[in-house]
Amino acid sequence: MPAPSTGKLTTSSYAILGLLAIQPWTTYELAKQMAVSLRNFWPRAESKLYEEPKKLVAHGLAEVRTDPVGRRPRSVYSITPAGRAALQAWLDEPGAVAALEFEALVKVFFAEQGTKEQLVANLERIVDDQRARVVVDAEWAGRYLEGGGTFPERLAVLSLVGRLQADFNDMILSWATWAREVVEDWPDDLRAAPPAPGAFEAVVARARGRLTPE
Image (cartoon, helix red, strand yellow):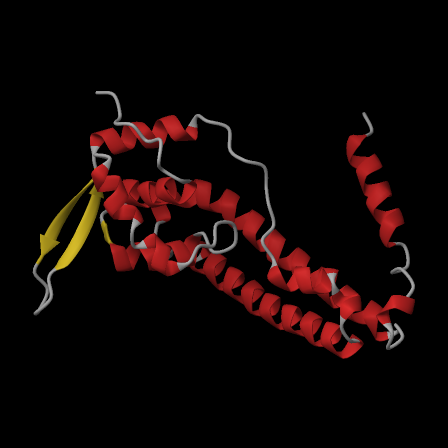
């Protein structure tokens, strides 16, 4: 059976559809799962995610049932056969290239418009935040190593994505720690600061090493 028209669906729609392909969820559970599992590479406001399941139902890609729970019934969404077909078709399409959404880095980019104190504080916050994420990554991986984890049946793909998430968080932590040390020697007037030693040279050398045929 051909899938219904999906012209108005977004990547977030398909992310929700992918979660529904794993198991049925309430909208609250979907939003929390998105925050837990896709936080590093597809962060979205929780409030906006509550509309996505309804959109999937309108497209015939999901269905909803009402379960009585206490005084307030809850809506539980599950994927339809058409939804699985649409998800498989979407997986066959090329995805957009990687993009970085990092507000703290925008502040580093314009740091010379402020003070050295502001830049140092911003970098220290990045270090603290990334240390916390590295700990979370290690705890997550440890649960699967010990035979736990929420979805052990998905271990193969989780190992691929989890490795990238952990490498990314570790890379940001290493960069912020390095940047904090570099800025320590800068003058108060950031417009008079020298470039970080070897920064541009490292970028060029790394690119040449990656692109040079063996």
